[in-house]
Image 1 (cartoon, protein in one colour):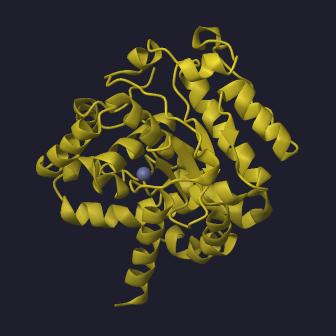
Image 2: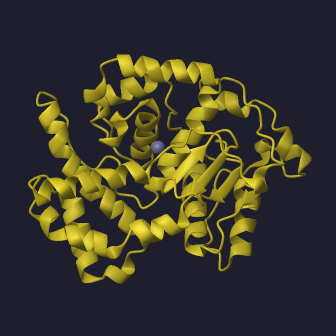
Image 3: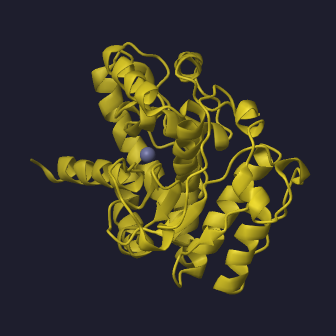
Length: 318
Ligand SMILES: [Zn+2]
């Protein structure tokens, strides 16, 4: 195994960790009193919003209809402010990201972008918590309706060194495209301007370019094989995880979800899923989350990808 192949596998490995979805049973002590809102099986976000949200009413917050169409994100100066922002604007009342204020602002801003995109008409997860078990960089636990972020893992894995170690190789890559070359130049000139989440996006761009070789090799006859659909926004991690949140809420019924997952496995659509990203080819869940992320990034998604996404009731953009 030569050095290049090893690096490639390392890069693909990070992508898998970066956007893992956790389906196991997990009980967080601080969430033990929390009852998940029952959301009926539905095919679009409008019908989610027509169902009563008794939890919100009982907490004395305004009804969903009273939500403003847009929120202006304001960076919190301390964790108390970040929690207040999440409760007041996003109606997320369990928001605990330890002492990681940068992460708290990142999550609030990413979720605010989603809220604004849907003009307030999209459900938020009930809980934001730390992944203390180092399972992934972030994941969604549908059992407790919790988005979990690995504060320590994000600091450990997404380093400036990891980006700079890859720069020279990627610059020479035949598939490196304008946006990433510009970003890499900016990074080289002023790495201090890049926080963990900028670096994560840059790293995802690098991974995507490497993956393109795989995709081309497996599906030489597919014409649309451009890299970069899932990168280009530092909030990609939040968008991806929120794609899981919304998909669980849209499908609602776990039996139906399982049958959709099995159906996609038999569908012979891997070549289409690969057009979004390598990670999108993993299973239905990751295809939906990665495509949602591409759409939130404002990317034009190939027609056959969009048809597949619609067929499996992927969350539509408003
Ligand atoms: Zn995922």
